Length: 123
Image 1 (cartoon, rainbow, N blue to C red):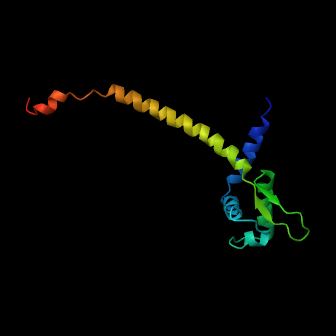
Image 2: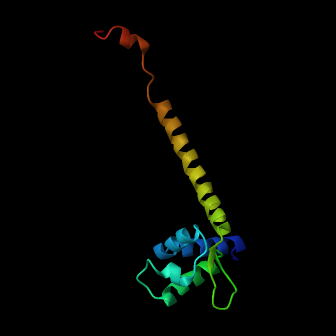
Image 3: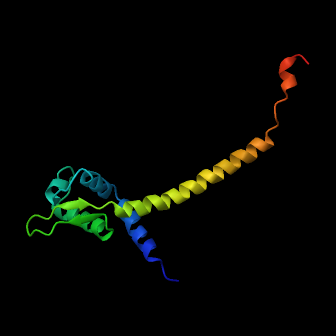
């Protein structure tokens, strides 16, 4: 059985997002492009480690890099996040619909309150 190309992209997106360091890198890039050095500042890791995280993000299509020889800023490309959001949204709708169905069934099982009981609380 062959996987759908979209599923492979989605898998790469979720795999890249699974790491908290990579999520923080994306959060920082949402504010604007940054170099490896700028991205490494708040982390206790080497430039090589940050570069490795950037390569994972690039492979998932979440980051693009500049082409200048010494200056290769990273930029956020949020398009893969839209597909991930849509995938999550499909399941959110499923659960919302399921919960609505359960609530409706529960309401049907709950006996309706008799308005006459309120008029004479003593019987």
